[in-house]
Each structure stands twice: as C-alpha cells, then as structure tokens.
Length: 91
Image 1 (tube, rainbow, N blue to C red):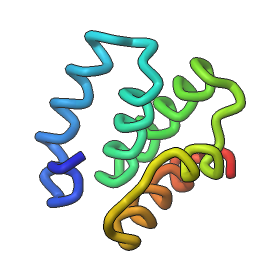
Image 2 (image 1 turned 45 degrees about the horizontal axis):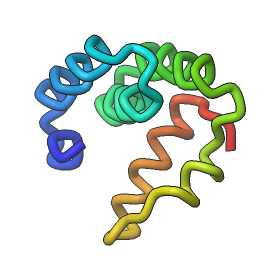
Image 3 (image 1 turned 90 degrees about the vertical axis):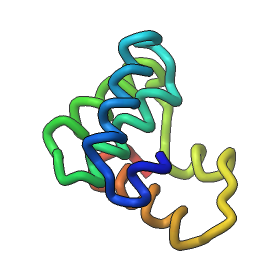
C-alpha cells in the first residue's frame, strides 16, 4: 500500500499480485489488490478483484471494514475507502 500512496502503482500492483498469487483466498490481499487497481485507474481489474473479495466474504462491506482498520491520517482513509467504493464494494 505504501507504493500506492506515493503513486508508484506498477510497483504496488507487482507486490499485491505476488501476495494474491501466494494466497489466492486471503481476504486482505484481495482487498489491497482491489484498492491498488482502483487507485491506478484500472477499473475493470478493480471490479474483478472486488468480486473476489465478495466471493471470499460475501457479507464484506466498506462499513464493516472501516470499523476494523485505523488510520493515522483521515485523508489516507478516505483515499483507501474511496478506492473500494469506486470498485463497487457495498457500503
């Protein structure tokens, strides 16, 4: 995610893809992949990853995720959650 926040999307995608390849059913890996694709403007890939998130955890929502994750910077949180919204993860 650090690479995504500094807009080095190719590097962020490389690491997320590696993580997802190693653990295809890891929810956090899929969420991160969704965010990185979304932030990089790869909307179709982000939506495909969002579908994988919901396959792994059908009741996953942004609201539930927001309660579990803490951020030091509110701007970072909104950027992250906005990427999930853009990928069509349910509220």
